Image 1 (cartoon, rainbow, N blue to C red):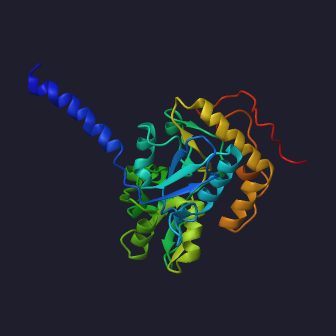
Image 2 (image 1 turned 60 degrees about the vertical axis):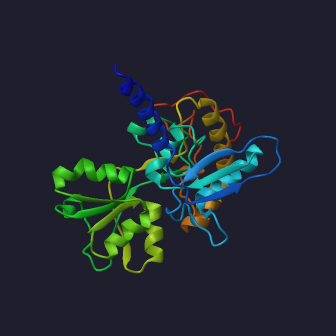
Length: 297
């Protein structure tokens, strides 16, 4: 092995590490009590994913995720520092050690669950299309044949378009932010935008030229909190807290505040699932919960 090759290998490793930590932080918000004698936990959100996390006029970010993890911080008696950055870089940054977990609503897919640990869902999400007002409603995915679909990068929405690209002759437009993906529809650069149902409905409520449309059948997933595979104990701690916030009505109250409707029977906001993690997914631990919290009634 030449001397130049020997130097290139460690430099390449340093370059990879730098890339993993290079996710630009757009804003930072700290929640929870100060001066507890414990270092703060670190997590991150996509700060353009309203109403889950989006810029606050007071600085930092606001939204359902910020309120939820402020309540988690209170229960833990520990501060949580929430960074705002592009979603496509969040999981690599967590795996590189920058974050203890992600506060971003993260869809629990089988592929992700094979590589990460998740809490049980605190919300259910479905994949939904948003279209420009005046566009004929989408009645099935066949109506998308030959069309351009906008998505947020690094998400299951991008994966769905890629997985169906050949079958439906789709063109993908992937953006770093959800607002850019919505604007592509309004401007006519994309036929439809694919995202989570809460986000599509919120965007439609704020943007007259954009309307919530077709929900893909069979796409209900847990939105949970992801951790590295070596963080089983912390996953258990955070899930115990989330279960107690479900039991005392906090998650339901925040859901109604940010999404405009009370949860229905069976919704994740008011359901405590057995064990740890989403049942029937890799990484699920059937050990009974130690939270001691149960739903009333």
